[in-house]
Length: 387
Image 1 (cartoon, helix red, strand yellow):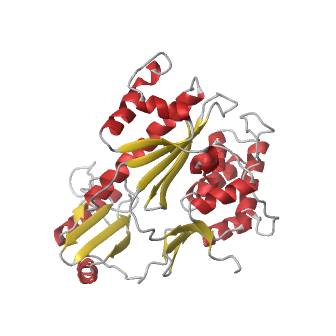
Image 2: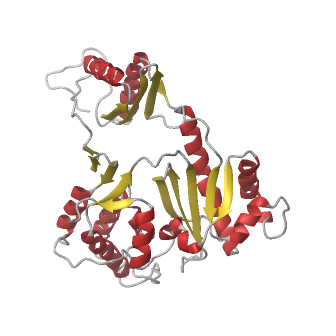
Image 3: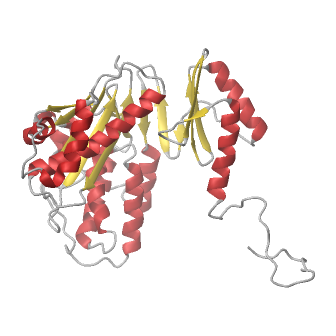
């Protein structure tokens, strides 16, 4: 912060400024802004969600009102139309706000609404990314990663411009918000940011060529007539050639709609496939518990036990078997955690055939046919495809 021109300190030297208002660029400015915004919406009568502090809600006789904020971008929705109008007017009194109307674009995410449901996609983001990298005229591919290929840390020569690799991988990470079909390959190339090599760059280029095939692909959210919560967990045992750690992959669905997913390498080495699968089950159990708490706070009632699907019978049996033995002693904490949720009627571990395992796409590279099958099950469609 520079001293204003023309200002001359009177008296003692070494004086400092007393900050009365937070400024852009200072570390405490986002906190100060969110604190001020929270005071305003809470004074209107909204309640802050205990499971997501950027989410506010209000339930009254007129209906439900929901508000979610990201810095200074706000989404307001609900069935209380009168309350929504009053909230907009109240915010305009407190801040300089601009009503953009019906939600169509938010933080790079395109929202298309129709009688069939709502589709979230990032078509413009993909096209801008392809244009920036010069891949707009490239030949499209059917899969984001070559099937059966394992990337290693020392594969190929070191890149001359690693910063370009890191910047591109970072943009691909944000694209996984609406493209779960590239979550696994992006997770893999993200493991080599410190010292990227030519083989890693080739893998990134392949992801871009896959995106070229259907840049407008997104996720469809529609009413399936129920509010059932279920999760699919999978693991690729010792899938990393460098350290032999396994990869956890899971996805959760609410009312038949995909709401969250993850592909991440496990933090420890699993001694068996059952152990790696069980650690993945513990991860998705945490996610399911959080979703249940969120839905309960928002007023959803009569939630039945959440089904946790796993294609490893040994892991399912460990969850249901109260006897500990040598194979499970070192993962006893995870065992107790899952079993507690099972005994409380929160989750219901069940076996699913590998051919119907939706989390398979988050743990390994697959062929085109398998990718299309899982994407259809997850509700992914391309509204820009020719009819």
